[in-house]
Amino acid sequence: MKSYFIKRLISTIPILIGISFLSFLLINLNQSDPAEISLRVNNITVTEEALATAQQELHLDKPFFERYVRWIASSIQGDFGDSFVTKKPVLEELKVALPATLRLVAITLTIILTISITAGVLCALFEGSWFDRLIRGIIFIGAAMPSFWLGLLLMWLLAVQLNLLPTSGMETASSVILPALTLSFAYIATYVRLIRNNMVQNKVEQYVQYARIRGLKESTVTKHIFKNSLQSSITALGMSIPKLIAGTVVVENIFAWPGIGRLCVTAIFNNDYPVIQAYILLMAVLFVLFNLLVDITTTALDPRVRKEA
Image 1 (tube, one colour):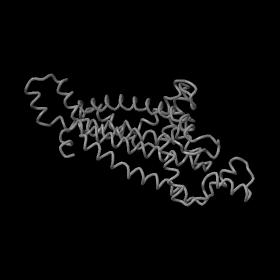
Image 2 (cartoon, rainbow, N blue to C red):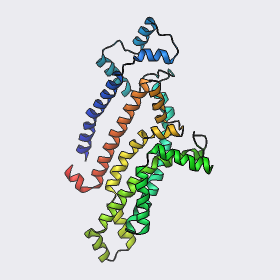
Image 3 (spheres, helix red, strand yellow):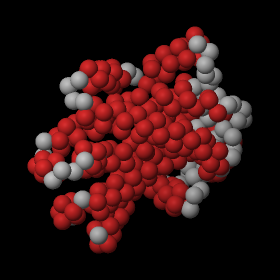
């Protein structure tokens, strides 16, 4: 396991370098001049002298690869530069916005796990029943709904018509319910299907028949079936966490949630390149690290995978 962990850790380095280079390249392929944008968003008259000064401050007068090396070296130390709009360090902007996003993701994960495990196990136990067909129909509809449309629908029903929840912002504790429900719906559909289908497949395995022949309680047999059905769900869950954080962009803007998704969209509209670059790099690091954690966890839990590794 130690050698496997070291190999997997080393393999992530070229992936991160490649992603960082592509993100830096794509931003620099934009025809807009970052120095000119920096001046305009701060209501500074664009003159040749002001433009030259801004280019020098932003190191735009240096060659491309030198700027990339400077940026990646600073990013490793936590220095992502300063925002064009606020003139504050990008790291401070992220620190302000990240807790709101993490709070939203944590509550969303709680909703996903609670509903998915309960519904998935019940559907597997009562396979073919009206309950099973009803839940499968609901999750089929849920998987087809775009998050922005579902968010507006929930806002209209629960906030406007029934006046049960606030429509936007983060003023009260209940403000997180609508965005969390919107964000969780598609994932619930995925995990209910995964848990149900895996449990249905495991129900007919020989170890289940042997356990029943031994006279084990049905609840004990169900626990074994559930435990042996979790591998694909754990893998999907590990990749869903960074996807949830990255996927809050639409939901945070619908519900005016002050997280990093809304920060990124605002930066895109303002052409705030340092914030955009930091966001892309942060999401890439999260995806790579969680992929690494999932692989290591799966290898540690499953002897078959560990043997192959």
